[in-house]
Image (cartoon, rainbow, N blue to C red; front, side):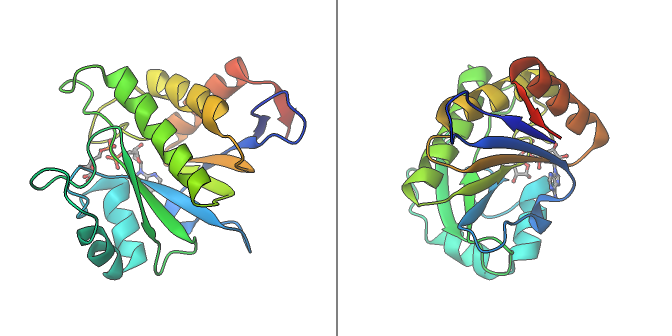
Amino acid sequence: ETFRLSAAAGAGALKLHKGDITLWSVDGATDAIVNAANGRMLGGGGVDGAIHQAAGPQLVQACRKVPEVKPGIRCPTGEARITPAFELPVSHVIHTVGPIYDMDRQPELLLKNAYENSLKLAKENGIQYIAFPAISCGIFRYPPKEAANIAISTARQFSGDLKEVHFVLFTDELYDIWRETAQEMLTRFEK
Ligand code: AR6
């Protein structure tokens, strides 16, 4: 389903899909998927595990080369880092770290920062098409309706020069929540 992200002519679109983000790409474009990583950036469960599995072992080698900002931490919560995507069908992976909902202070701000910093990094790297999973909505237990509001409003504010911002939702429940939230928030564009 497609929604207009902005009233401005030529501005990007928001697209929602259900499925596996490791299969997503846009043919012939500079594109990136976003990984819901952790601060160490060396892999994990959930979408992080799926992305490392599909990208192959070169991805963890590239992640190891990202400098630590404090011992063991390559990407603090709310920040983003970029690597090549290796065996994935996209050009790049943008790794971001969302908040652990019932542990981190100011989870709303940290989740907004994770989306915003991913979009800014994409723009700086000439990425035209980007796909996000539902950051923090799995192992990190963020309530999905609140997460959808932050995800979609931040995509609208910071999509900048990107052509399209996609969300790839893994479950029917998450897909329905994202779609309802987009319908509440954005002008329906076309089916
Ligand atoms: N494609 C799209 N979405 C997926 C996929 C997939 N292949 N697999 C899972 N999801 P989670 P978090 C959805 O737990 O909550 C890892 O161990 C999943 O259904 O992957 O940010 C990291 O290393 C959920 O809706 O990420 C961190 O330690 C969403 O992706 C921690 O988990 C995010 O769930 C991050 O936790």
